[in-house]
Image 1: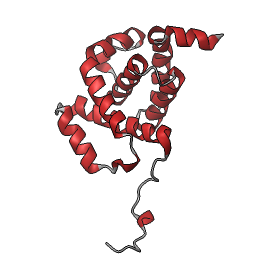
Image 2: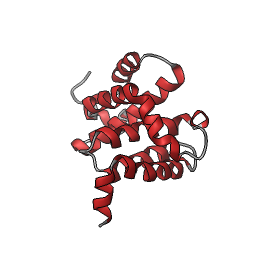
Image 3: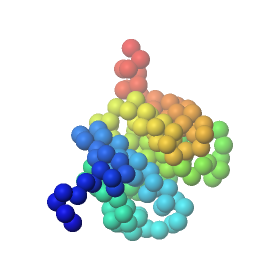
Image 4: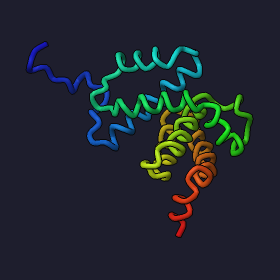
Length: 161
């Protein structure tokens, strides 16, 4: 490859700069990997390896990507149980993209108290806008708005003051 090669022509997206942007990309890729895991039934190790080969991880918080995948997989029953009471339809009828987003967001609410609950909800909504059905973001927002006070009671209460 020439040193004068202009990468901007083949770069599909700008590099994520900063921790927040790198986490946003990690969430996006993790949601897609979780969707694939749900649909294809492949092992998460295979899927993670495939994602790391097929995607440029230079602008991704790779450790966070891994943490989301392993955390959601390890806690899937508890995560599903946490948000199921707030669903308007049975869990097995959920759109698989929205299910992946809810699992990822529920995991963040439960295990990553360093990420403010409003950020978790907003990131879930943004993922649903990009990848979900037409009004999927409204559904995700409604579920996460009800889940946050359960998993982050003190933070939500303090925020309402």
